[in-house]
Structure formats: C-alpha cells, structure tokens
Image 1: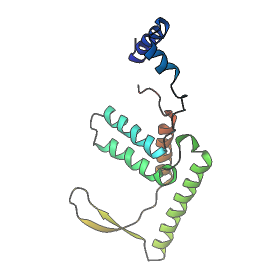
Image 2: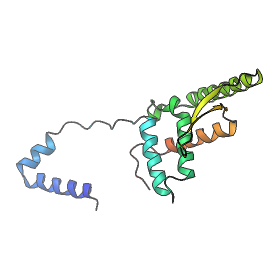
Image 3: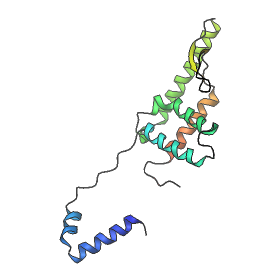
Image 4: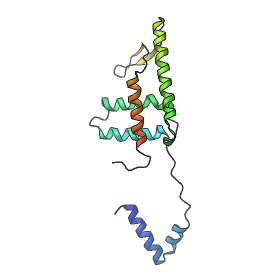
Length: 159
C-alpha cells in the first residue's frame, strides 16, 4: 500500500472514531486547486533529466543531441504551457527555420556569408565560422523530440 493510501486510511479511521484534531484538519482544508501546467521549458528540463538517467553515458553524444534538439525549439515553445503547443505553432517554427536557412544560403551566394562566433568546448577557443541553416531532416528530428516531450503528460508517473 502506498504512503498516501496509508495516510487516507489512517485519516478516515481517525475521523470515524471522532478524533477532533483530525476531523478539523480534514474538513477545514481549502478546496483543491488543479496543479499548474508547467511550461515547455520546465517540463522539457525534467524530461531531459529523466532521459539522461536512462542513458549509460549521461553526458555522452545522445544526451548532447537531445539537448541540442530541444534548444532549437525552445525559443518558440519554451514559454508556452505544454498543452498550448499546437500544430500551427510548430508550423510557424518550421517556416521560420526554413526562411533562416534560405537567408543564409542567399548571403553565401552573394559572396557575403553570414557568420557566427563559436566557442569550442574542448579547447575554450572562440572562432568565427559561417552560419549553417538546418536541413529539413534536422528540423523534423527537433519536432519529433518535442512530440516525445509533450506526449508524457505533466504529473504522470515516471516508468
């Protein structure tokens, strides 16, 4: 029997036998409020933590890849409650990422490639490199990871 079930059994017995303190505590409680739905950012952080614990190397390539995939969608989904993420919002993100890729390609074709500063985590050195747009397959991987996060409802038992 779970600890919450034991408490309910104990409390019910105490109220039935007339223990005044228990009766007051159980009957004078505030009405239950539904639990707040977490934002995608908060819920995906919990999800990523659970996934890392399942991996043999919690800091390995798979964990870093999952973190990167979530980072791609975070600016679009992060502040939204998990249940408010719709297909339309996902399509807007896809359109934005495709436009960004086309902009990068056009700049490269015109001879003025867009650049970014990159800090190598192994050496700590900062380099300037050409920006690269995300391929359709990478965009799809990011969205599939988001679906995995959202398919586990907030507050559900971890298996």
